[in-house]
Image (cartoon, rainbow, N blue to C red; front, side, top):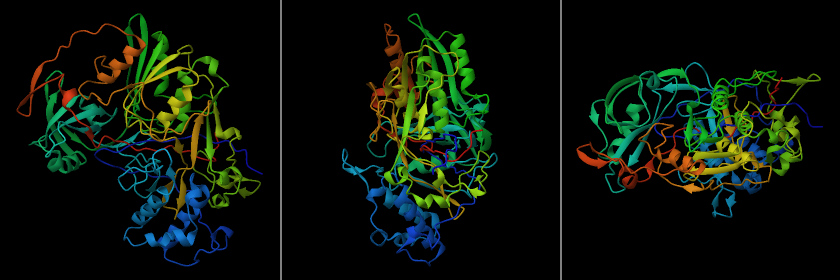
Length: 550
Protein backbone atom coordinates (compact mmCIF):
# COMPACT_ATOMS: atom_id res chain seq x y z
CA UNK A 1 0.00 0.00 0.00
CA UNK A 2 1.25 3.47 -0.87
CA UNK A 3 2.36 5.77 1.91
CA UNK A 4 0.31 8.88 2.59
CA UNK A 5 3.33 10.79 3.88
CA UNK A 6 2.90 14.45 3.18
CA UNK A 7 5.71 16.26 1.42
CA UNK A 8 6.79 19.77 0.60
CA UNK A 9 6.32 20.81 -3.02
CA UNK A 10 9.43 22.33 -4.48
CA UNK A 11 10.26 23.29 -8.02
CA UNK A 12 13.20 24.96 -9.53
CA UNK A 13 13.95 26.76 -12.73
CA UNK A 14 16.89 28.71 -14.05
CA UNK A 15 19.07 29.70 -17.08
CA UNK A 16 22.72 30.56 -18.13
CA UNK A 17 24.48 33.73 -19.50
CA UNK A 18 28.10 34.44 -18.66
CA UNK A 19 29.29 32.48 -15.66
CA UNK A 20 28.19 29.29 -14.00
CA UNK A 21 28.35 28.17 -10.40
CA UNK A 22 27.29 24.94 -8.79
CA UNK A 23 25.61 23.93 -5.57
CA UNK A 24 25.47 21.04 -3.17
CA UNK A 25 23.05 18.73 -1.41
CA UNK A 26 23.28 16.85 1.84
CA UNK A 27 24.07 13.17 1.52
CA UNK A 28 20.96 11.09 1.55
CA UNK A 29 22.50 7.63 2.02
CA UNK A 30 21.06 6.35 -1.25
CA UNK A 31 21.87 2.94 -2.66
CA UNK A 32 21.94 1.80 -6.25
CA UNK A 33 20.18 -1.22 -7.73
CA UNK A 34 21.76 -4.42 -6.42
CA UNK A 35 22.94 -7.14 -8.75
CA UNK A 36 20.20 -9.44 -7.41
CA UNK A 37 17.35 -7.01 -8.10
CA UNK A 38 14.92 -8.37 -10.75
CA UNK A 39 15.12 -5.13 -12.73
CA UNK A 40 18.79 -5.82 -13.49
CA UNK A 41 18.10 -9.07 -15.32
CA UNK A 42 20.35 -9.20 -18.35
CA UNK A 43 22.58 -6.41 -17.04
CA UNK A 44 26.25 -7.22 -16.34
CA UNK A 45 26.99 -7.73 -12.65
CA UNK A 46 30.58 -6.50 -12.80
CA UNK A 47 32.33 -3.50 -14.26
CA UNK A 48 34.13 -0.29 -13.41
CA UNK A 49 32.53 2.28 -11.13
CA UNK A 50 31.66 4.40 -14.15
CA UNK A 51 30.14 1.47 -16.08
CA UNK A 52 27.97 0.44 -13.13
CA UNK A 53 26.69 4.00 -12.71
CA UNK A 54 25.96 4.23 -16.44
CA UNK A 55 23.88 1.07 -16.03
CA UNK A 56 22.06 2.57 -13.03
CA UNK A 57 21.25 5.76 -14.91
CA UNK A 58 19.70 3.75 -17.71
CA UNK A 59 17.73 1.54 -15.32
CA UNK A 60 16.25 4.52 -13.50
CA UNK A 61 15.29 6.16 -16.78
CA UNK A 62 13.67 2.93 -17.99
CA UNK A 63 11.26 3.06 -15.07
CA UNK A 64 10.76 6.67 -14.00
CA UNK A 65 11.63 8.96 -16.95
CA UNK A 66 8.46 10.66 -18.16
CA UNK A 67 9.09 9.39 -21.70
CA UNK A 68 10.45 5.99 -20.63
CA UNK A 69 8.43 4.29 -23.37
CA UNK A 70 10.98 5.61 -25.89
CA UNK A 71 13.93 3.75 -24.30
CA UNK A 72 15.00 0.52 -26.04
CA UNK A 73 16.12 -2.56 -24.13
CA UNK A 74 19.47 -2.57 -22.35
CA UNK A 75 21.38 -4.50 -25.03
CA UNK A 76 20.16 -2.12 -27.73
CA UNK A 77 20.82 1.09 -25.81
CA UNK A 78 24.15 -0.17 -24.38
CA UNK A 79 24.80 2.39 -21.61
CA UNK A 80 28.46 1.41 -21.28
CA UNK A 81 29.33 2.82 -24.67
CA UNK A 82 29.37 6.24 -22.96
CA UNK A 83 32.39 5.36 -20.79
CA UNK A 84 35.16 6.76 -22.99
CA UNK A 85 35.84 10.10 -21.30
CA UNK A 86 38.24 10.69 -18.43
CA UNK A 87 35.76 12.60 -16.24
CA UNK A 88 32.93 10.41 -14.97
CA UNK A 89 30.41 13.27 -15.07
CA UNK A 90 31.11 13.84 -18.77
CA UNK A 91 30.15 10.23 -19.47
CA UNK A 92 26.96 10.49 -17.43
CA UNK A 93 26.04 13.75 -19.18
CA UNK A 94 26.51 12.07 -22.57
CA UNK A 95 24.27 9.17 -21.62
CA UNK A 96 21.57 11.43 -20.19
CA UNK A 97 21.64 13.47 -23.38
CA UNK A 98 21.18 10.32 -25.46
CA UNK A 99 18.23 9.28 -23.28
CA UNK A 100 16.66 12.73 -23.56
CA UNK A 101 16.73 12.76 -27.36
CA UNK A 102 14.71 9.57 -27.90
CA UNK A 103 11.13 10.85 -27.52
CA UNK A 104 9.95 12.89 -30.51
CA UNK A 105 7.40 15.66 -30.15
CA UNK A 106 4.98 15.18 -33.08
CA UNK A 107 4.25 18.91 -33.19
CA UNK A 108 7.87 19.85 -33.85
CA UNK A 109 9.33 16.62 -35.28
CA UNK A 110 12.20 17.07 -32.83
CA UNK A 111 12.84 15.53 -29.42
CA UNK A 112 10.87 17.05 -26.55
CA UNK A 113 14.21 17.84 -24.93
CA UNK A 114 15.87 19.24 -28.06
CA UNK A 115 17.87 22.38 -27.32
CA UNK A 116 20.38 22.41 -30.15
CA UNK A 117 23.49 22.79 -28.02
CA UNK A 118 24.33 19.19 -27.08
CA UNK A 119 22.52 19.28 -23.72
CA UNK A 120 19.02 18.16 -22.76
CA UNK A 121 16.47 20.96 -22.63
CA UNK A 122 15.13 19.90 -19.24
CA UNK A 123 17.27 17.19 -17.61
CA UNK A 124 20.71 17.49 -16.01
CA UNK A 125 23.14 15.93 -13.53
CA UNK A 126 24.71 17.79 -10.61
CA UNK A 127 27.94 16.85 -8.81
CA UNK A 128 27.16 17.62 -5.17
CA UNK A 129 30.85 17.82 -4.24
CA UNK A 130 31.01 21.12 -6.09
CA UNK A 131 29.31 23.86 -4.13
CA UNK A 132 28.96 27.59 -3.71
CA UNK A 133 30.94 28.83 -0.73
CA UNK A 134 28.99 29.26 2.49
CA UNK A 135 26.05 29.26 2.76
CA UNK A 136 25.62 25.95 0.97
CA UNK A 137 22.90 25.45 -1.59
CA UNK A 138 20.70 22.63 -2.77
CA UNK A 139 20.77 23.05 -6.50
CA UNK A 140 23.13 23.76 -9.36
CA UNK A 141 22.62 27.33 -10.56
CA UNK A 142 24.41 30.13 -12.30
CA UNK A 143 25.23 32.93 -9.88
CA UNK A 144 22.36 32.99 -7.37
CA UNK A 145 20.73 29.68 -6.55
CA UNK A 146 17.18 29.03 -5.49
CA UNK A 147 18.15 29.25 -1.83
CA UNK A 148 19.21 32.86 -2.53
CA UNK A 149 22.91 32.06 -2.19
CA UNK A 150 25.16 34.03 -4.50
CA UNK A 151 28.87 33.82 -5.25
CA UNK A 152 29.78 36.35 -7.89
CA UNK A 153 29.95 40.12 -8.39
CA UNK A 154 26.16 40.34 -8.59
CA UNK A 155 25.21 41.49 -12.09
CA UNK A 156 23.32 39.88 -14.95
CA UNK A 157 25.26 41.02 -18.05
CA UNK A 158 23.93 40.45 -21.57
CA UNK A 159 25.50 41.13 -24.94
CA UNK A 160 23.05 42.99 -27.20
CA UNK A 161 24.19 42.60 -30.81
CA UNK A 162 23.74 45.67 -33.00
CA UNK A 163 24.54 43.69 -36.13
CA UNK A 164 24.56 40.03 -37.11
CA UNK A 165 27.40 40.62 -39.56
CA UNK A 166 30.94 39.75 -38.43
CA UNK A 167 32.61 40.88 -36.26
CA UNK A 168 29.18 41.54 -34.69
CA UNK A 169 29.46 44.77 -32.67
CA UNK A 170 27.47 44.82 -29.47
CA UNK A 171 26.42 46.67 -26.35
CA UNK A 172 27.14 45.07 -22.99
CA UNK A 173 24.31 45.94 -20.60
CA UNK A 174 23.68 45.27 -16.95
CA UNK A 175 20.17 43.83 -17.23
CA UNK A 176 19.74 43.10 -13.51
CA UNK A 177 21.56 43.53 -10.21
CA UNK A 178 21.08 40.85 -7.57
CA UNK A 179 19.95 42.33 -4.22
CA UNK A 180 22.54 41.93 -1.48
CA UNK A 181 25.40 41.45 -3.94
CA UNK A 182 28.66 43.40 -4.19
CA UNK A 183 27.23 45.22 -7.22
CA UNK A 184 24.07 46.20 -5.34
CA UNK A 185 26.17 47.48 -2.42
CA UNK A 186 28.26 49.53 -4.85
CA UNK A 187 25.15 51.11 -6.39
CA UNK A 188 25.26 49.39 -9.78
CA UNK A 189 21.94 49.66 -11.63
CA UNK A 190 20.06 47.94 -14.45
CA UNK A 191 20.48 50.10 -17.55
CA UNK A 192 24.22 50.66 -17.13
CA UNK A 193 26.12 50.27 -20.39
CA UNK A 194 29.56 48.74 -19.83
CA UNK A 195 32.13 50.27 -22.19
CA UNK A 196 35.38 49.14 -20.54
CA UNK A 197 36.28 45.96 -18.67
CA UNK A 198 39.52 46.13 -16.68
CA UNK A 199 40.52 49.19 -18.65
CA UNK A 200 39.96 47.62 -22.06
CA UNK A 201 37.32 49.08 -24.39
CA UNK A 202 34.65 46.54 -25.35
CA UNK A 203 31.81 46.45 -27.85
CA UNK A 204 33.42 46.32 -31.27
CA UNK A 205 33.51 42.55 -31.83
CA UNK A 206 31.40 39.95 -30.06
CA UNK A 207 33.22 37.21 -31.97
CA UNK A 208 36.66 38.12 -30.65
CA UNK A 209 35.80 39.72 -27.28
CA UNK A 210 32.96 37.77 -25.69
CA UNK A 211 35.09 34.94 -24.24
CA UNK A 212 37.59 37.25 -22.54
CA UNK A 213 34.86 39.61 -21.31
CA UNK A 214 32.92 36.69 -19.84
CA UNK A 215 36.07 35.39 -18.13
CA UNK A 216 36.79 38.82 -16.64
CA UNK A 217 33.23 39.18 -15.32
CA UNK A 218 33.52 35.75 -13.70
CA UNK A 219 36.86 36.56 -12.08
CA UNK A 220 37.61 37.41 -8.46
CA UNK A 221 37.75 41.14 -9.18
CA UNK A 222 36.78 43.32 -12.13
CA UNK A 223 36.72 47.04 -12.89
CA UNK A 224 33.83 48.28 -15.02
CA UNK A 225 33.48 51.65 -16.71
CA UNK A 226 30.68 53.08 -18.81
CA UNK A 227 27.56 55.21 -18.68
CA UNK A 228 23.98 55.06 -17.51
CA UNK A 229 22.41 54.72 -20.97
CA UNK A 230 19.44 57.03 -20.42
CA UNK A 231 21.00 59.76 -18.26
CA UNK A 232 24.47 59.50 -19.83
CA UNK A 233 26.10 59.71 -16.39
CA UNK A 234 29.51 57.98 -16.38
CA UNK A 235 30.48 55.34 -13.84
CA UNK A 236 33.61 53.49 -12.77
CA UNK A 237 33.40 50.73 -10.20
CA UNK A 238 35.58 47.85 -9.02
CA UNK A 239 33.63 44.77 -7.90
CA UNK A 240 35.02 41.86 -5.92
CA UNK A 241 33.46 38.42 -6.12
CA UNK A 242 31.88 37.44 -2.80
CA UNK A 243 29.39 35.13 -1.15
CA UNK A 244 26.06 36.78 -0.29
CA UNK A 245 22.37 36.16 0.39
CA UNK A 246 19.96 37.62 -2.15
CA UNK A 247 16.26 38.41 -2.15
CA UNK A 248 14.39 37.27 -5.28
CA UNK A 249 12.53 40.59 -5.38
CA UNK A 250 14.27 42.97 -7.77
CA UNK A 251 11.76 45.69 -7.01
CA UNK A 252 8.08 46.35 -6.32
CA UNK A 253 5.92 49.48 -6.45
CA UNK A 254 2.38 50.79 -6.82
CA UNK A 255 1.72 52.67 -10.07
CA UNK A 256 -1.19 55.13 -10.36
CA UNK A 257 -2.61 55.30 -13.86
CA UNK A 258 -6.00 56.19 -15.37
CA UNK A 259 -7.70 55.98 -11.99
CA UNK A 260 -6.23 52.56 -11.24
CA UNK A 261 -3.69 51.41 -8.70
CA UNK A 262 -1.44 48.82 -10.36
CA UNK A 263 0.93 46.68 -8.32
CA UNK A 264 4.25 45.89 -10.02
CA UNK A 265 6.57 43.08 -8.90
CA UNK A 266 9.84 42.17 -10.61
CA UNK A 267 10.64 38.66 -9.39
CA UNK A 268 13.98 36.96 -10.05
CA UNK A 269 13.39 33.36 -8.93
CA UNK A 270 11.15 31.18 -6.80
CA UNK A 271 13.45 30.98 -3.80
CA UNK A 272 12.72 28.73 -0.83
CA UNK A 273 9.90 29.97 1.39
CA UNK A 274 10.61 31.00 4.95
CA UNK A 275 7.67 29.00 6.25
CA UNK A 276 6.60 27.56 9.56
CA UNK A 277 4.07 24.73 9.31
CA UNK A 278 1.82 26.54 11.80
CA UNK A 279 2.25 30.01 10.32
CA UNK A 280 3.16 30.01 6.60
CA UNK A 281 4.90 33.21 5.60
CA UNK A 282 7.56 34.52 3.29
CA UNK A 283 10.03 37.23 4.21
CA UNK A 284 10.34 38.33 0.57
CA UNK A 285 6.79 38.20 -0.81
CA UNK A 286 4.67 39.09 2.23
CA UNK A 287 5.93 42.70 2.56
CA UNK A 288 5.31 43.26 -1.17
CA UNK A 289 1.69 42.18 -0.98
CA UNK A 290 1.13 44.03 2.27
CA UNK A 291 2.19 47.20 0.42
CA UNK A 292 -0.16 46.32 -2.43
CA UNK A 293 -3.06 46.02 0.01
CA UNK A 294 -2.26 49.33 1.70
CA UNK A 295 -1.84 50.93 -1.72
CA UNK A 296 -5.34 49.74 -2.70
CA UNK A 297 -4.06 47.86 -5.74
CA UNK A 298 -6.72 46.92 -8.30
CA UNK A 299 -4.58 45.22 -10.96
CA UNK A 300 -1.18 43.49 -11.13
CA UNK A 301 1.91 43.31 -13.33
CA UNK A 302 4.30 40.48 -12.42
CA UNK A 303 7.63 40.69 -14.22
CA UNK A 304 9.07 37.21 -14.77
CA UNK A 305 11.25 38.02 -17.78
CA UNK A 306 14.40 36.52 -16.18
CA UNK A 307 12.69 34.03 -13.90
CA UNK A 308 13.64 30.49 -14.89
CA UNK A 309 11.68 29.13 -11.94
CA UNK A 310 12.36 27.83 -8.47
CA UNK A 311 10.58 25.95 -5.73
CA UNK A 312 7.11 24.79 -6.67
CA UNK A 313 5.77 25.51 -3.19
CA UNK A 314 6.83 29.14 -3.67
CA UNK A 315 4.92 29.23 -6.96
CA UNK A 316 1.89 27.92 -5.05
CA UNK A 317 2.39 30.52 -2.34
CA UNK A 318 2.58 33.38 -4.85
CA UNK A 319 -0.50 32.04 -6.66
CA UNK A 320 -2.38 32.12 -3.34
CA UNK A 321 -1.29 35.72 -2.73
CA UNK A 322 -2.49 36.75 -6.20
CA UNK A 323 -5.67 34.74 -6.77
CA UNK A 324 -9.14 36.01 -5.75
CA UNK A 325 -10.48 34.62 -2.46
CA UNK A 326 -13.17 32.75 -4.43
CA UNK A 327 -10.53 30.29 -5.66
CA UNK A 328 -10.00 28.72 -2.22
CA UNK A 329 -10.51 24.97 -2.47
CA UNK A 330 -10.32 24.98 -6.28
CA UNK A 331 -7.71 22.95 -8.13
CA UNK A 332 -4.45 24.73 -8.93
CA UNK A 333 -2.59 22.03 -10.89
CA UNK A 334 -1.96 18.27 -11.14
CA UNK A 335 1.32 16.39 -11.53
CA UNK A 336 1.16 13.49 -13.99
CA UNK A 337 3.79 10.70 -13.95
CA UNK A 338 4.35 7.88 -16.44
CA UNK A 339 2.15 4.78 -16.28
CA UNK A 340 4.73 2.67 -14.46
CA UNK A 341 5.00 5.29 -11.72
CA UNK A 342 1.25 5.72 -11.46
CA UNK A 343 0.66 1.98 -11.00
CA UNK A 344 3.32 1.50 -8.31
CA UNK A 345 5.61 -0.53 -10.57
CA UNK A 346 8.68 1.71 -10.44
CA UNK A 347 10.39 -0.65 -8.01
CA UNK A 348 13.80 0.92 -8.59
CA UNK A 349 12.75 3.80 -6.33
CA UNK A 350 13.08 1.46 -3.36
CA UNK A 351 16.79 2.34 -3.53
CA UNK A 352 16.08 6.02 -2.84
CA UNK A 353 15.21 6.98 0.77
CA UNK A 354 12.45 9.51 1.42
CA UNK A 355 13.97 12.29 3.51
CA UNK A 356 12.42 14.63 6.06
CA UNK A 357 12.75 18.43 6.02
CA UNK A 358 16.17 18.15 7.64
CA UNK A 359 17.49 15.73 5.02
CA UNK A 360 17.25 12.74 7.37
CA UNK A 361 16.07 9.26 6.44
CA UNK A 362 12.49 8.54 7.56
CA UNK A 363 11.27 5.31 9.16
CA UNK A 364 7.79 3.86 9.55
CA UNK A 365 7.16 0.74 11.63
CA UNK A 366 10.91 0.19 11.89
CA UNK A 367 11.29 0.17 8.08
CA UNK A 368 13.05 2.85 6.07
CA UNK A 369 10.60 4.82 3.93
CA UNK A 370 11.71 5.06 0.30
CA UNK A 371 10.45 6.94 -2.71
CA UNK A 372 8.82 3.69 -3.86
CA UNK A 373 6.44 3.95 -0.88
CA UNK A 374 4.86 7.17 -2.14
CA UNK A 375 1.80 7.51 -4.34
CA UNK A 376 2.33 8.81 -7.88
CA UNK A 377 -1.23 8.34 -9.17
CA UNK A 378 -3.11 11.32 -10.61
CA UNK A 379 -5.81 10.93 -7.94
CA UNK A 380 -3.41 11.16 -4.99
CA UNK A 381 -3.84 14.31 -2.90
CA UNK A 382 -0.12 15.05 -2.94
CA UNK A 383 -0.14 15.21 -6.72
CA UNK A 384 -2.95 17.77 -6.82
CA UNK A 385 -2.42 21.31 -5.54
CA UNK A 386 -5.43 23.39 -4.51
CA UNK A 387 -5.80 27.09 -3.80
CA UNK A 388 -5.79 28.32 -0.19
CA UNK A 389 -5.99 32.12 -0.33
CA UNK A 390 -3.30 34.07 1.52
CA UNK A 391 -2.98 37.75 2.32
CA UNK A 392 -5.45 40.59 1.94
CA UNK A 393 -5.31 41.20 -1.81
CA UNK A 394 -8.53 39.32 -2.43
CA UNK A 395 -10.33 40.82 -5.42
CA UNK A 396 -7.77 41.41 -8.21
CA UNK A 397 -9.05 39.88 -11.44
CA UNK A 398 -6.69 41.33 -14.05
CA UNK A 399 -3.01 40.42 -14.20
CA UNK A 400 -0.33 40.88 -16.86
CA UNK A 401 2.84 38.78 -16.81
CA UNK A 402 6.00 40.11 -18.44
CA UNK A 403 7.79 37.12 -19.99
CA UNK A 404 10.68 36.21 -22.27
CA UNK A 405 12.65 33.23 -23.52
CA UNK A 406 14.11 33.13 -20.00
CA UNK A 407 10.71 32.58 -18.36
CA UNK A 408 10.40 28.89 -17.53
CA UNK A 409 9.13 26.09 -15.36
CA UNK A 410 7.69 27.35 -12.06
CA UNK A 411 7.05 30.72 -13.72
CA UNK A 412 5.04 29.03 -16.46
CA UNK A 413 3.35 26.87 -13.84
CA UNK A 414 2.19 29.99 -11.98
CA UNK A 415 0.81 31.54 -15.16
CA UNK A 416 -0.94 28.36 -16.27
CA UNK A 417 -2.46 27.75 -12.82
CA UNK A 418 -4.05 31.22 -12.68
CA UNK A 419 -5.49 31.19 -16.20
CA UNK A 420 -8.75 29.38 -15.29
CA UNK A 421 -9.55 31.91 -12.56
CA UNK A 422 -8.28 35.33 -13.69
CA UNK A 423 -7.99 37.52 -16.76
CA UNK A 424 -4.36 36.64 -17.53
CA UNK A 425 -2.42 38.42 -20.27
CA UNK A 426 1.21 38.05 -21.34
CA UNK A 427 3.55 40.62 -22.90
CA UNK A 428 7.11 40.12 -24.11
CA UNK A 429 8.72 37.21 -25.93
CA UNK A 430 7.64 33.56 -26.15
CA UNK A 431 8.50 31.69 -22.94
CA UNK A 432 11.01 28.85 -22.66
CA UNK A 433 8.44 26.02 -22.64
CA UNK A 434 8.89 23.67 -19.68
CA UNK A 435 5.74 21.96 -18.39
CA UNK A 436 7.72 19.10 -16.82
CA UNK A 437 9.45 18.72 -13.46
CA UNK A 438 11.50 16.25 -11.46
CA UNK A 439 12.97 15.25 -8.13
CA UNK A 440 16.60 14.20 -7.62
CA UNK A 441 17.90 10.63 -7.86
CA UNK A 442 21.22 10.13 -6.05
CA UNK A 443 23.94 7.94 -7.65
CA UNK A 444 27.32 7.06 -6.12
CA UNK A 445 26.26 9.20 -3.16
CA UNK A 446 27.69 12.03 -5.25
CA UNK A 447 25.63 12.74 -8.36
CA UNK A 448 22.07 14.04 -8.30
CA UNK A 449 20.22 13.16 -11.49
CA UNK A 450 17.32 15.39 -12.51
CA UNK A 451 15.47 13.81 -15.41
CA UNK A 452 11.99 14.83 -16.52
CA UNK A 453 9.55 12.85 -14.38
CA UNK A 454 6.14 14.52 -14.45
CA UNK A 455 4.05 16.93 -16.46
CA UNK A 456 1.81 19.59 -14.91
CA UNK A 457 -1.69 20.58 -16.03
CA UNK A 458 -4.05 23.21 -14.68
CA UNK A 459 -7.69 22.93 -13.57
CA UNK A 460 -8.84 22.95 -17.20
CA UNK A 461 -6.34 20.19 -18.05
CA UNK A 462 -4.28 22.70 -20.00
CA UNK A 463 -0.54 22.19 -20.31
CA UNK A 464 1.89 20.74 -22.82
CA UNK A 465 3.41 24.13 -23.68
CA UNK A 466 6.68 22.55 -24.81
CA UNK A 467 7.27 25.22 -27.45
CA UNK A 468 6.54 28.00 -24.97
CA UNK A 469 3.67 30.33 -24.19
CA UNK A 470 3.09 32.96 -26.87
CA UNK A 471 2.35 36.41 -25.39
CA UNK A 472 -0.85 38.29 -26.19
CA UNK A 473 1.43 41.18 -27.07
CA UNK A 474 4.50 39.63 -28.70
CA UNK A 475 7.58 41.87 -28.75
CA UNK A 476 11.15 40.54 -28.75
CA UNK A 477 12.66 43.83 -27.53
CA UNK A 478 13.66 43.43 -23.89
CA UNK A 479 14.66 47.04 -23.18
CA UNK A 480 17.89 46.95 -21.13
CA UNK A 481 18.24 50.73 -20.94
CA UNK A 482 15.73 51.41 -18.15
CA UNK A 483 15.38 50.06 -14.60
CA UNK A 484 12.68 47.66 -13.46
CA UNK A 485 9.51 49.59 -12.71
CA UNK A 486 10.22 52.47 -15.12
CA UNK A 487 6.89 53.11 -16.86
CA UNK A 488 8.69 53.94 -20.12
CA UNK A 489 10.51 50.59 -20.20
CA UNK A 490 9.20 48.71 -23.23
CA UNK A 491 7.62 45.65 -21.61
CA UNK A 492 6.15 47.49 -18.62
CA UNK A 493 4.75 50.13 -20.96
CA UNK A 494 3.00 47.40 -22.97
CA UNK A 495 1.63 45.82 -19.80
CA UNK A 496 0.28 49.13 -18.50
CA UNK A 497 -1.36 49.82 -21.85
CA UNK A 498 -3.35 46.60 -21.45
CA UNK A 499 -4.50 47.38 -17.90
CA UNK A 500 -4.92 51.15 -18.15
CA UNK A 501 -4.64 52.54 -21.70
CA UNK A 502 -3.63 56.18 -21.94
CA UNK A 503 -2.56 58.64 -24.59
CA UNK A 504 1.15 58.39 -25.34
CA UNK A 505 3.42 61.42 -25.17
CA UNK A 506 5.59 62.28 -28.15
CA UNK A 507 8.97 60.55 -28.19
CA UNK A 508 11.67 62.49 -26.37
CA UNK A 509 14.66 60.71 -27.89
CA UNK A 510 18.12 62.22 -27.72
CA UNK A 511 21.39 61.68 -29.52
CA UNK A 512 24.33 60.21 -27.64
CA UNK A 513 27.80 59.02 -28.56
CA UNK A 514 28.57 55.37 -27.89
CA UNK A 515 31.94 53.91 -28.84
CA UNK A 516 32.70 56.88 -31.07
CA UNK A 517 29.43 56.74 -33.02
CA UNK A 518 26.19 58.63 -32.60
CA UNK A 519 23.11 56.66 -31.69
CA UNK A 520 19.63 57.90 -30.97
CA UNK A 521 18.15 56.35 -27.84
CA UNK A 522 14.98 55.49 -29.75
CA UNK A 523 16.94 53.76 -32.53
CA UNK A 524 18.47 51.11 -30.29
CA UNK A 525 15.18 49.22 -30.40
CA UNK A 526 15.29 49.16 -34.17
CA UNK A 527 18.97 48.26 -34.53
CA UNK A 528 19.48 45.62 -31.86
CA UNK A 529 19.31 42.05 -33.05
CA UNK A 530 18.86 38.86 -31.04
CA UNK A 531 20.68 38.97 -27.75
CA UNK A 532 23.77 36.80 -27.50
CA UNK A 533 23.62 34.25 -24.66
CA UNK A 534 20.25 35.47 -23.34
CA UNK A 535 19.91 32.85 -20.59
CA UNK A 536 21.48 33.57 -17.24
CA UNK A 537 20.07 31.35 -14.53
CA UNK A 538 19.30 27.69 -13.98
CA UNK A 539 16.13 26.00 -15.31
CA UNK A 540 14.21 23.16 -13.77
CA UNK A 541 11.21 22.29 -11.63
CA UNK A 542 12.20 20.14 -8.69
CA UNK A 543 9.86 18.19 -6.49
CA UNK A 544 11.25 16.94 -3.19
CA UNK A 545 9.42 13.76 -2.49
CA UNK A 546 8.87 12.36 0.98
CA UNK A 547 9.50 15.58 2.87
CA UNK A 548 7.34 15.88 5.98
CA UNK A 549 5.71 19.28 6.20
CA UNK A 550 5.05 19.10 9.94
